[in-house]
Image (cartoon, rainbow, N blue to C red):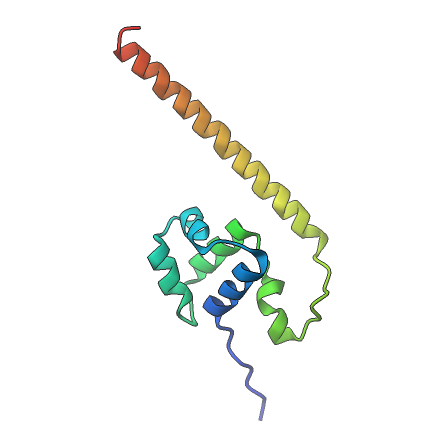
Length: 119
């Protein structure tokens, strides 16, 4: 008979990682586009929606190996894969693109206000 592995409590694991990495849950909620109460409720459950798990991982930079390391018996001093830095660089680039996009939108709105005010 095969040994049954313990299921991962994703909500608790995320809360632990948020605490370890000094990540504010309220900020994560904002970044994934949900109300803080909704995220808190989701994190209180052991099973979570896969889309939400992926979004949290994306916005926080948490990697799968960090979530599963306890179940896999991974040593705490594990070195992060080289890919992590490129993922962070990708996130930074995406954020910079978003900032540029929002700046352009803001400039266009300001221009429209000036036109509407007859200036």
